[in-house]
Image (tube, rainbow, N blue to C red; front, side, top):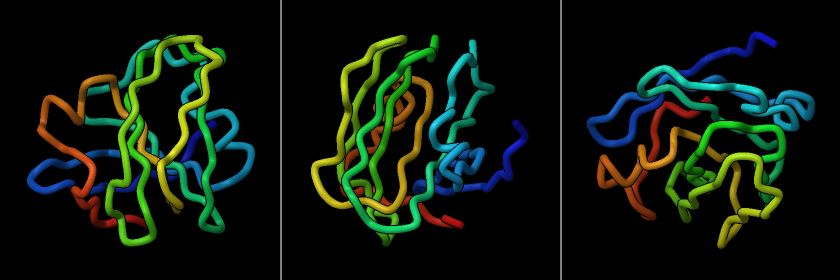
Length: 120
């Protein structure tokens, strides 16, 4: 499934993100991906603000997920383990979620309160 992409900015850091903006693409996410290129991830775009939870069924990559509000501010970040059925949920209402390789945000000192720009 080829998805549109967006170039996002988080401070000085650039992310190439595949954009999952349909129910089908959000449901499939990064399932069955063995790796991601450096500074690549997936941006989940929701039609309405809510509290969607994520899990890692059929996903072999350890990922970190940043939950973003309507202005692109990171509400919280969670680490997710491969193949886990544990739910990872935002701590407040969100409009976007950004999945990156596990540790990507921590390595760049990106935390809750940081802002992601150039969102579609």
